[in-house]
Image (cartoon, rainbow, N blue to C red; front, side, top):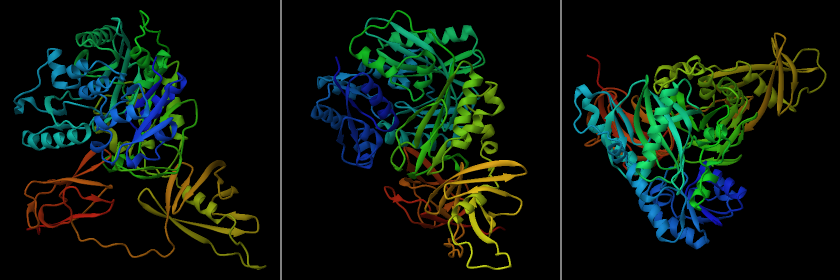
Amino acid sequence: MIASVLVANRGEIACRVVRTCRDLGIRTVAVHSDADGNALHVRVADTAVRLPGTAPADTYLRGDLIVKAALAAGADAVHPGYGFLSENAGFARAVRDAGLVWIGPPPEAIEAMASKTRAKELMGIEPLREVTEADLPVLVKAAAGGGGRGMRVVRRLADLDAERAAARAEAASAFGDGEVFVEPYVQDGRHVEVQVLADTHGTVWTLGTRDCSLQRRHQKVIEEAPAPGLAPALTDELHALAVRAARAVGYVGAGTVEFLVAGDRAHFLEMNTRLQVEHPVTEAVFGIDLVAEQIRVAEGHALAADPPPAHGHAVEARLYAEDPARDWAPQTGRLHRLCVPGAVRLDTGYTDGDDIGVHYDPLLAKAVAHAPTRAEAVRTLASALERAVVHGPVTNRDLLVRSLRHREFAEGRMDTSFYDRHLTALTEPAPDPYAPLAAALADAHGRSRFGGWRNLPSGPQVKRYALAGEEHEVRYRHTRDGLAADGVRVVHADAGLVVLEVDGVRRRYEIGRYGDRVYAGTTALTALPRFPEPAAQHAPGSLLAPMPGTVVRVADGLAEGAAVRAGEPLLWLEAMKMQHRITAPVTGTLDALHVAPGQQVEVGALLAVVEAHPTP
């Protein structure tokens, strides 16, 4: 019997594994980088071991340090979570060679399937060796790992080499393996996967299907089980292919076989030899704990002959610290408050007051709703996210709510190009026009109202806020009866709650205040000073860092005085395990280059200046 498990991961998945271990009476050991010294997964584990450094390559990707940590802490098993070393056969062998139990598939199965090139060969599928115009569009893809990292769609042959190099760099940073391959890109397909669970006694379960078609940058955003609208024959085919893949490599434990579905055809993508981020929707539908099953299988227990029956429908949404309207730019800062109400499951690696840094994935939490029908599950999840309190960095919460309520999604007609078609409309600002007034009234509560009796009414008070990129000025007055504003009845106003009545309809705003950042209900505002300071001036053509991160690459041969074309990549920033291209805003000359590879920059830092060529 396993008595103590080291979780070789961080964040939400580490917390989730710890939770199940506690339910089973198993002690837990966390590992952490210097950046994660006070992270939630460290606080909830029974003990923790430091991995010196902050970069994944120095910490969570150091299998040798993690094995030493497990032995030092007295663990007798290792659970890899997902990402990092979860699909690294060498790490699995090192764990076993150290006399520890590996809660995962055999290293040989990982080797066969963790490399997507070898997995395709095993399933009789050859990657593209030579790419021609007739093959376009194609997908450059990392052979190891997943999560959308190291993936690039190429629509022009001239871009292939550059995109291949970018994918290699991103894959090497995220997984420690820069191998990439090229395959046909299935346009407008659905991303459908099958959860498998196998024991050491020859039993292989297929636990239904999941649809993961709503993706950004090839990373999933909303997932559900079962996949809606699949013909029974196609579902049976997917299950059969998943069992075939598992048996072909002698699979043991939890894994996922992924497909692209176009029409009634299924195209094998890969087998992920680990737990998936979206596993909670399968747990909800089948009423099981997949982590607990992983542990039991690792202990040698046999599965029942058949899996439990499925019930209802489940939908999961990933809450990211990112700005979808700004090319999904990751966000950092203090998470002041996170609360998702309603009948939903919330898996998270953060609590109120935690800091979101630049070193790791920007996933804040996963919210999961389960109901008898798909429509009920979608409605429950959308409502819970709409009412969620998320005070801190910008998130994709509003996008999630709008996506869940979009007609295509509601009708189950989504595909992997959903955000290509609808992102602009889904991120269109829709500010609450009364939120600034609510913030101002809350701020005014308790302030001095009168300096003595007077017959003349007091003049209006003025407050200014930034909202959705625009400045909003609000006016209110102190009266004998309290605070007042034109056209609005102030029902209640104090520092924490404002209730307004507009045209007979009451609007309730709970207030949160953190420095100059104010939240009125779910609306985030920035309080502007009464006398604004002069804005910093930048030369035309200045390129500013859209996020904090590390400069990982500068275009080959780029130097001051070089000619550049509009849209040409000049340098690459890495933030939260993703690389972001910084391109020339205009055609002209590189007038200044202020950064070099390896340099860390803050948001708004001046990276380079491009002087535009004069128009003839």
